[in-house]
Amino acid sequence: MGHRSYLIKRGLSTIPMFVGLSVLIFTLARVIPGRPARLALGPRASDEAVQNLRDQMGLDKPLWEQYFDYVGGVVQGDLGQSLISNRNVATDLLEYFPATFELTTLAMILAIFVGVPLGVIAGQHKDRWPDNASRLFSFFNVSLPPFWAGILLQLAVAFQLGWLPATGRVGDVSPMPVETTGLLLVDSLLAFNVPALISSSQHLILPAITLSLAPIADIARMTRSSFIEEYDKDYVEGLRTHGIPERLIAYKYVLRRSFASTLTIIGLDYGFLLGSAFVVEIVFSWPGMASYGVEAILQKDINAMVGVTLVVGASFLLVNFVVDVLYGVFDPRVWHEGDSQ
Image (cartoon, rainbow, N blue to C red):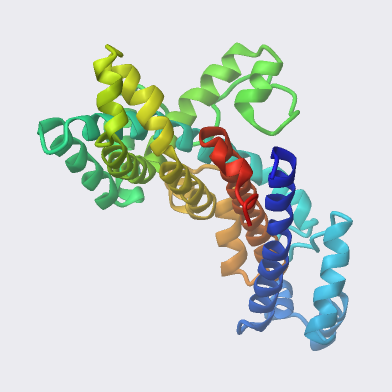
């Protein structure tokens, strides 16, 4: 099996998963208790007005017919109307998703750049003080609730030291860069807007650090265990006898061969961050999709609930597809899996 066949096979395998996810999410959103039309119009709305809204939303149709109507709209970019904002859910998500994507992506990059070296150092010094310190650090990160870590960082770094802003996505900058991608860092770079770039970077640091703590621990622990397993193999001793520096052995040979397990954790953690960033977004008043999703759940805004969940699910599948591709980059034997079958 070549590169192209491998990619096509992996890409096609995500389609039934996405269809199954959409059926599950749509069904759950429709069967949960509550009267979304009544909630949207308020307690003083007449029964006639409520019934008219139910007709507009198609809530009186059979569930299977509602699903196919919804899928037909999704194909055309229509995710239905939000009962809260009275706009198309797709429009709302285009507004909120870039902020969440920017935050979670930076948090994951930070987690990789800290967690992987931490795991390698721990693996190289198994059962010695660097290993114990790394495990203690990982345990501390996992045990610390994100909202508590965020509040501590705000108190220490923002309020006590005054180094970074405590809340928001950008400060009082004028003019703001023209919105091209919705990612403030990228748009600031494209517009060569240095004040906006500095301000958005400063606002991003604390929430990104908060969100990255748990993934740092996961990545460090997985890197350590897979690194130790690979580090004990005979070829490593052979590389040493040829005079190859220990750092080169660790990062070029051992880490590359043992990185597949860490990639799996990175993919899972990234998908988890996209769906669970709401705590950090609320603490830092971050205008992202997670807080929009929480509001949708509280208000029984079923179109917004389904839209948010679908976007998170699709992002999760996309990340896992990228991880599958990276498996082949780190271990070319994956490209040819199934050839012998």
